Picture 1 (cartoon, helix red, strand yellow):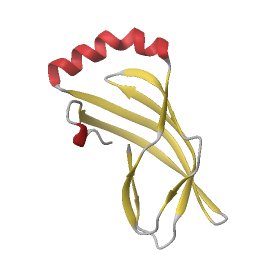
Picture 2 (cartoon, helix red, strand yellow; picture 1 turned 60 degrees about the vertical axis):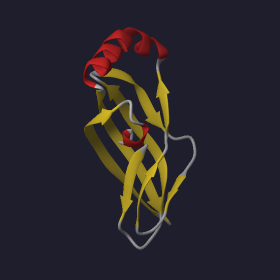
Picture 3 (cartoon, helix red, strand yellow; picture 1 turned 30 degrees about the vertical axis):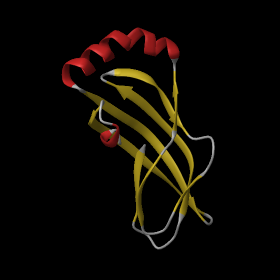
Picture 4 (cartoon, rainbow, N blue to C red; picture 1 turned 30 degrees about the horizontal axis):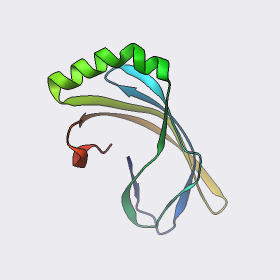
Length: 112
């Protein structure tokens, strides 16, 4: 889930996402969206996006990830890359660099 704030009076579409997903220092893959997501005008909502995880990277880092989560009950999530949005004919690319601790065992708090 990724929070998106749109303080503008016009809606827009997220047309392309290319974010690297890192959990506790382990690169797990890319966040990509296969369909356009519509963001309403004057909104501040959390949206769900697909994460493509490379299975080999999960296996390689699984003990490290599991151990650190069990010790701290938290994981450090990093997202870095670009999101492209479009409103009518105007497009914009937004750089993303998010580094945030997330409480893992409380589903209400598992929001980026």
